[in-house]
Length: 136
Image (cartoon, rainbow, N blue to C red):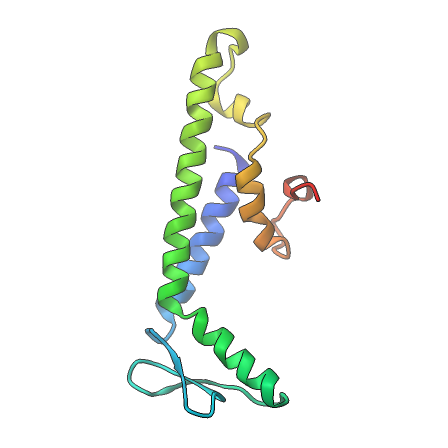
């Protein structure tokens, strides 16, 4: 299987594990918007060392990206990957006779434009490869 696909699946597995290990959501901000609260009103995070609006914006950002949303994003991205792989396999099947390659050989030459875009979110990961960087 293509390295890019394996890289993305591994990152999504990590994202899922982190979301499942976190305090369950949905999360919400307290009235002052300086704390993130779990469903049982237990404090998940406190915004501190920031100026007023920056603190509130940070808390709102954390709330917006709570574990349920992270899990929905993982599920959606997995479906995108699966669809792209299936589309590539269909293209390979149509060209099998003229290329005479295995799918993995053909996929190594196939440009995964959509998957390159998904992988760009992980560009700071040590296993990210510059060849995956989408064109500007």
